[in-house]
Length: 79
Image 1 (cartoon, rainbow, N blue to C red):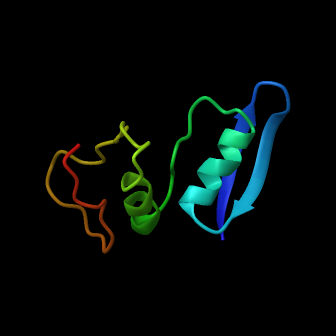
Image 2: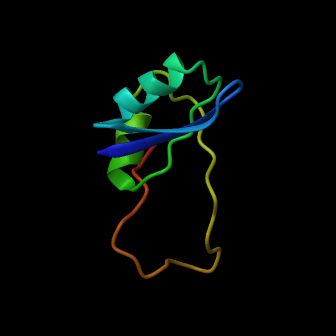
């Protein structure tokens, strides 16, 4: 299960379990959250980026000095 954690205006912080990104977003929308942020691993990002409602990405550059030794990467995108 993925985890959906969101803060609502009236209820404070709320945590729910979801079986996929689409379900997590639906839970956040039911709680009237104005924004949904997807934090994950490569597969979670890839699933989220395929949604029509995903139109903005906030990326953090970890190193400007060449590749990092790792085995998972952010999915290729046209962002």
